[in-house]
Length: 166
Image 1 (cartoon, helix red, strand yellow):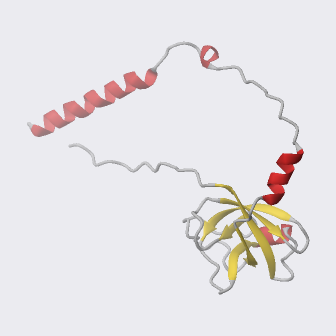
Image 2: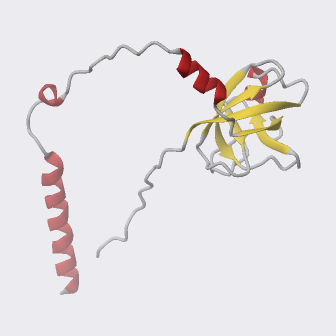
Image 3: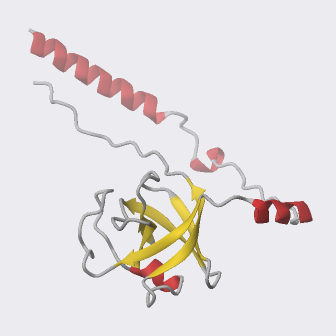
């Protein structure tokens, strides 16, 4: 008897969910809102002054890691790809976008934190080989860099299957 009630309830919820998901039956053309383009305001002197005065998140020594770790699992669960613009940081949330600036030559790159590290004391970030190449620090191995936060990670919902009703 309980199985019948549970089965009936499950069917009812599925049908009710489908009806609610259908929504407005109008065409897609009716639901699309026009894109409005706004001209960006020109930068002012005060805007540039604020950017120059912005404090970095962190300044310190960066290193890079490459082929030995290529394909191995990172702290985020994805395989490490030495040709992606990624990095390892000890405390920033995984998925954070960070602008890394080489203070020796001024070159900068934006990387996504997908791993934990560095494991060597005194270093603030481990960069992928590709990020190191773009900063021109792959030959030195280490370099003083500035880290600026670009964006926090986006929350992603993970859907897991629920138990089947029998």
